[in-house]
Length: 465
Ligand code: HEM
Image (cartoon, rainbow, N blue to C red; front, side, top):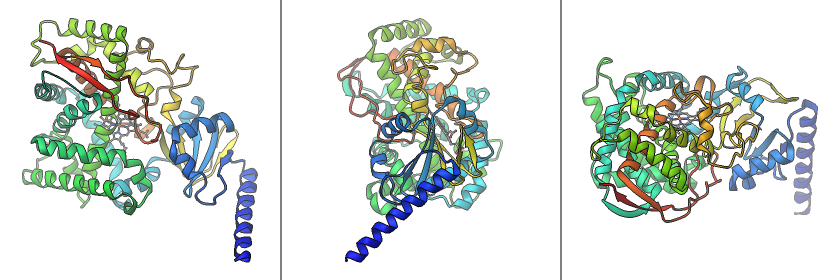
């Protein structure tokens, strides 16, 4: 027993020294590795990763590596290095995400490497700004129809209200009516499984399904749901000219057995970030009386004379709703994704350090947006700061990286901005809301995606006649 323990101690000390000298020799960034080989600081990091990152930056400087569960995550935090992250040939998007994609959507690496670029290209092409008019009128109808199903008066959790109204409308609009959960039970079932899948997505990228029974069940339910939809849609497979929805384009482009798996990822990408941001935009507006008042003045002046039950929102209306747009962008800034990633494929120089191949290079939009030099008074919700950006041309403020950047920047960003602005304006025009709880803090438990609220946020709502 004693020799075994001694051996273990020697191995631990040697591996620590080996790592340490290797780090020094190669001028790697400071590495936070804890005492456990391989596990590193996985437990401390996993408990509250966003908090961990900020404390590490304060202690170790702007570039540092976190060793967690066999992975080296190298965080860069200086604005001046972001361009390298987005454009360097020494980092790779596909290699960074292929394992998470395999775990969360069961898509094999070969299929992913073959199809990813083409998938990104067709989504980007369909959702480019000049093509949004294709989706505009139908999305407005969908929102009107969902809002008609809401009670005239009641109280509920704001995040849940947003999900119930937006999930079916957005899915129907982007993927086609056949993709929209129809009856109330199917809607509830979809919402339940999507929530579990989304909530566990980050763990799903790391852990075997064996440890995540409930998550794995929901993933299977969603995959079967997608298979059924695609089976129905295959019966009238469109020609290229008839292909209108993203689902049609997916079916035309993906010819291997993983088509429904890609469908699931597409649905996840289209809902997982935009829906929490819609919640935050409404939440921030409602929690500041002066902001609510200004927002309502703008909405009522733009929608004046329109029938409240079936409002037709036009592209020019959205162009006039500039204050709502500022509120939305400010909400995105404050609740941006915890981190985005690239795999280092060639030694990469950042500041005076060399980042070795194999590291996952990490950039946190959430923290980048709290840089006081670029965003004065960064924790404050100040919609007015967006007046300095060219909103008409959709030029964002310097340092705003919520949608990533470079070749694989979010292809759904223009659609996201349109749907959130349209939904928030319509909902506030039709219903008067009062917050019953204080606006919750964002949960710091996730690195993937935009921030979820830490707790419930009940509201009272009443239809405006
Ligand atoms: C406020 C809402 C949204 C935010 C903040 C957001 C943010 C992001 C970010 C940060 C990325 C990774 C980019 C990178 O690594 O450089 C991404 C990827 C992606 N987003 Fe979005 N997104 C939003 C809404 C949407 C919507 C509505 C759609 C679809 C309609 C969408 C579709 C996608 C897809 C398909 C990818 C993966 C691209 C690829 O694999 O190449 N996103 N998004």
